[in-house]
Length: 178
Image 1 (cartoon, rainbow, N blue to C red):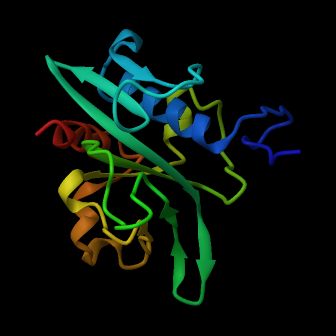
Image 2: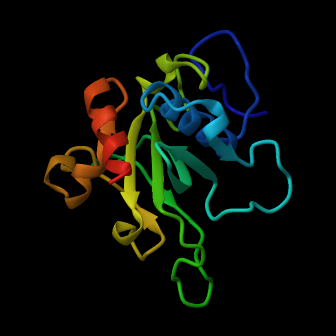
């Protein structure tokens, strides 16, 4: 059995990949006012994508492909952090093999997901943290572990927004498209 996704009596069996795609769709819908018809993903498609990454978003006559990663909040002696890893890289060279436009990382409130609402509602966004890194800023090590205590000192802080901060999320959305 999988962990409960929400802090409620309901049980929603969903895997982390599907959860990430739904949360990106929700982010695009409620933060970017992007209609569902302008978001392509492979949630229900079992074959290969026709585009690089997990999701393709159209907005104001532009398009972006996004690789999506999720992580529950972890703790160690250095502090709370997320561990995003294993995006589409070549096993031999470690270089990105599909040139997606953005790495869309979603920090979930707990290792067992811990969302307070279904992932397709705007309330679910409020308990998440978002990092949207441009292709050229993606770590070459195939892992990204932002520590929350020192986040404001890191170069990737400009690509961060907490879901409870609507204005920061809107700024992150607009920054994605520049």
